[in-house]
Image (tube, rainbow, N blue to C red):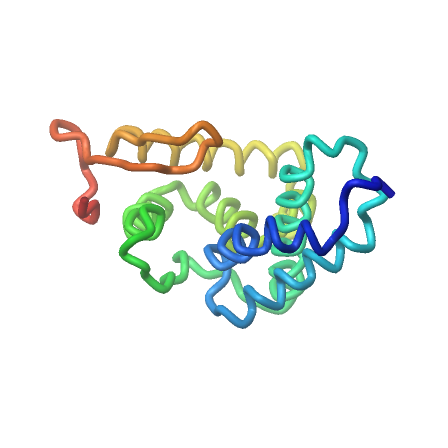
Length: 188
């Protein structure tokens, strides 16, 4: 175990960030707190596996992504595929939440095979291997569909709006492109 790291100090430093990260991906505060607890439990039990202390944030956020994926994977075993992204609870101060209606319309505009691949992996949280099994296609075919869906969504968003990001890649601001914005839901 790396001597300079302890879970208590990691909790103080990362709890709020991890909770916010998870809360954006689940619908309820209580569930987000439960999943945050699971993240820190995994951190506590697996801190010895961290090879480079300088990458602690990336390691912690990867654990958070895995916990979220595990949560949705457990639910997706019995959940039917939905044609639309569920409505998030809106927080008008959050730029990503302001873009959610636009993203939903863009996802719905994807060709059905890309839309289904995107919804299953990004919304329901199943792995691309599981996607391949469910759709009875090769793993490389599943990966290709997800990558193409992401690329098409990215292009739709870039055609619609100009985005500004911080040095860590977080969304700082956006503005509709006056001449090419096709998004009637962008309210900024």
